[in-house]
Amino acid sequence: MRLAFAGSPQFGAWVLGDLTAAGRSPLLVITPPDRPQGRGRQPAPCPVAVLADALGIPVLRTPDINQEAVAAVLEEGKIDVLLVAAFGQLLKPPLLEALSCLNLHASLLPRHRGAAPIHWALRNGESETGVCVMRMEEALDAGPVAAVTRISISPRDDAGSLGRALALLGALAADQVLTAMADGTVEWRQQSEGWTYAPKVGPNDRLLRPELGAVAAHNLVRSLSPDTGSEVGCGGLRLKVWRTWPWEAEADGLPAAGREVAGRPGHWGFDKNRLFLGCAQGALEVFRIQPAGKPVMSAAEFVRGYGRRLQTSPAP
Image (cartoon, rainbow, N blue to C red; front, side, top):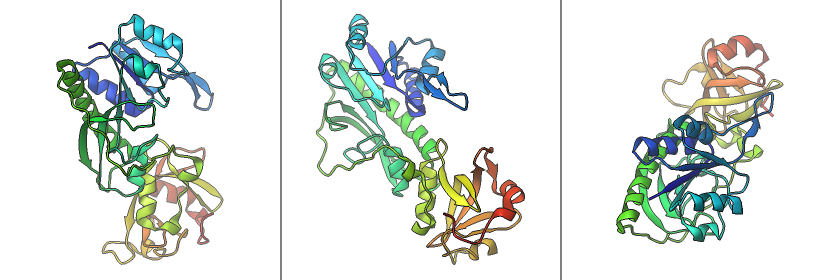
């Protein structure tokens, strides 16, 4: 089968790399156009395009995969199957009707249809997720499924570690589905009822709200790490928080600095080496933190540089 691949972010790049390592290298990779990035806002390729270039796979950049020009390239290349993983563009007829379009979706469908399934699984504190290979239809993530792989979520997982594990499992599942399609043995099963939606993460979704409790705050932080970071204020500072752990107020081993702020949402406690944010239930220990315009630093580095600016009044 002649395969093309469409993707954009790091998750898609992981899938592409794992597919290639399994001997299933696509003949063509489709990505969005290069976008302005960094302080200089210079156009830069997405992670999938970077990897495809390194692997020597031709890359087609397009703002709309449904354009006739894209269909012409696919037809010229005699592509049979288009595999999509975190591409960010909706496929429409006639493209969906011209060839077999598969989507590798990082959730246990029908749960978490939409753009950010890994984020919402972590943010909700779920203990299990998975990856599905589905046949694409015009409705969002609603097509029949040929493969489902489940995986447990550790309380220490973040979007990076969980995404990496799901990408590998998804690539292996996609390889098996493609083999079954070629053999004529693939079986498609309609999704069950009771779907949920995992929308794109917006600015308000990045705000760390200690009034929600330490566990909920920790789940938010890990759902946004290592790429985006959660945001909180402190003594006039705007901070991004990257790695944390939740403590119950009466937990054995919680240092005095944490006990002082446990149950006091928005208050900060610290000693020489450790940093805590008080939450409605318990305290959130912060291991990696980043003041605006500064590099990411450890709790001890932050306390040494900014300890005097930590205030006992709640963060905005």
